[in-house]
Length: 170
Image 1 (tube, rainbow, N blue to C red):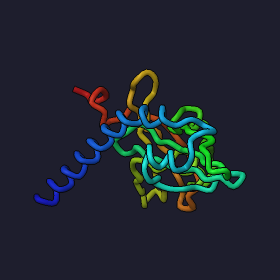
Image 2 (cartoon, rainbow, N blue to C red; image 1 turned 120 degrees about the horizontal axis):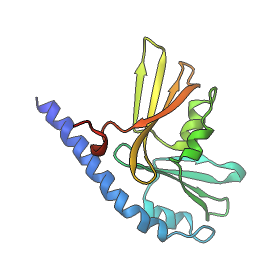
Image 3 (cartoon, rainbow, N blue to C red; image 1 turned 180 degrees about the horizontal axis):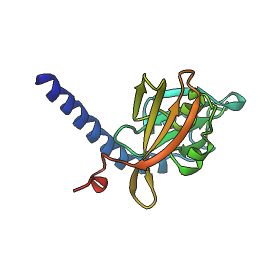
């Protein structure tokens, strides 16, 4: 029973942290200007990145994840000159459309960031990665990517977020 309460407390803390981060993101973003802000400025505003990816041309892309409670993931590219060259919220229909059958899992991760949940289906020999996002104007959705055992994309899809209060059946 104590383990269950510990799990509930951890989930509640993560959800609260996600809400706090959501409120801070616009302020953090407004403080950064492409071509002017430095890596130090980015780290000051956003903290340590979840992951650092190599970017084309010798730059690096910092991943700032807002999953599982949030609806956004940010990729911030630092050019070889040490200046921020791009700041993107990557959980978008345009990026989801780029995820195609046969793509490798690492390429999807570089594009969308860390998912909110990874679910293995051993009998089907599949693994599903889920990302929470907002469909305009403010509908909470889940984008899913199904991978085979070689971690290549089989298919994708979106559904209403079953955890969102506005989507729960009364």
